[in-house]
Length: 543
Ligand code: GLC
Ligand code: CA
Image 1 (cartoon, helix red, strand yellow):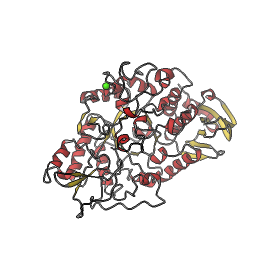
Image 2 (cartoon, rainbow, N blue to C red):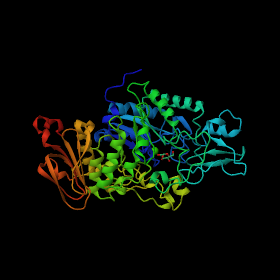
Image 3 (cartoon, rainbow, N blue to C red):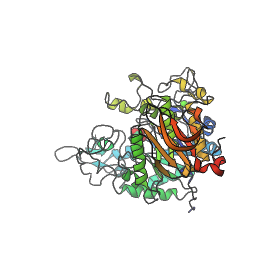
Image 4 (cartoon, helix red, strand yellow):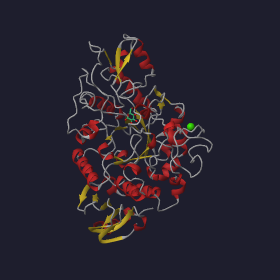
């Protein structure tokens, strides 16, 4: 077994999430593909990211755009093939960029051959790969569990008169992780991709994989239950966070340790309680990283963000490394959700994201300040907007194509092609921002570069500093200070001495701060504080 390096690569990394259908189309069908990711490697390496997380690329009938896998060992033909993945891993590696894939262990597509076989007969060899239950004697559903995508979790299979479990769409049957054959199969899937050079996996819905063996009813909500717990309309105590799920992640982590460098596991657990989020790290024997949804869903105020970051620091302690995400393919993009499209706020949010203690995950387009795109009803693609019409806007607005150029096709696809989802404001394109030193894109890139060069920002400890109302100020390491003004008025932050390294208002870069830092509305700054001036200055010199 390989010795783990002292500092794992992901601790210092900035990860960039790509929704491959929306990044770059290379064959003019209006759908992005893996060859498109390959084509844009020079951009990604210019931007300075260290790893790409690709949402599912496996074969899939696309009921949930790849989160319904029909073959874990092959690639969706619209995206490419195994050869393209190999070329991508190789070419990205030459740019110092690693590839993280998405893995969906909770459920498969109902068109996966495992499920086709399982539903063929009650005594079929793979029946027990999924969760089946008889109706209650009075004909009622096996229990009261609710699906995350609306309605009960149970779907009747008329030919066998049994129900199968699905915590998402009815066409996404849940796997039965009590069956050791399922565990063995997933070990093979992990090794299949690790052997090809994949650096790690983002684990879809990692807290729901093991279900109560007795399928006990979930209890009703309590008035004090927090927002994410309330989503199902019941407390999911028997359908998620089961103690046995941790055995699965310990087993996967052992597979990761067979490789050098050790492969990475990043979990998705949509949970309010940060102690529970922390538990998925185990004793450094489960996931190395786990997404922080309380941060994603926090209000964009100094108080709310300071609170969630401090609670994270307290729950995680020094031994667990946080992840900071502002946008992803399931939530409204932060420039809309947090910043209502205000460019100043967008810059400040990026400055925050890239200066916290932990690994930042950017979502494609974050660096442009890309906002949600309204999608006309006749073009909605997300199954959720069809399943819960009127109730839920669906997730299409945050999945629209990347804006490369300000011209028809946006540099994403050929000009004559209507992309699979509509384009947003082409004025935000890479082309229009790349050469503008005041742009959001340049700010994002410069922050990534600063992070690379500053050991304070990469690894320094985190401490909150006193600041006036509406301002959140923190220290990183021995000599880096970050101050963010969430208010609409100019403020004076006392007791700050040093030099501005990067400010969201770029005209402030390099300014000396003699003792009071003035911040305009929605302005943020990273400073090298005075204590470090003697001798250390060059450490932070920007290229
Ligand atoms: C995760 C994914 C989401 C998907 C769901 C079911 O939450 O991020 O996109 O629909 O799992 O797989
Ligand atoms: Ca294509």
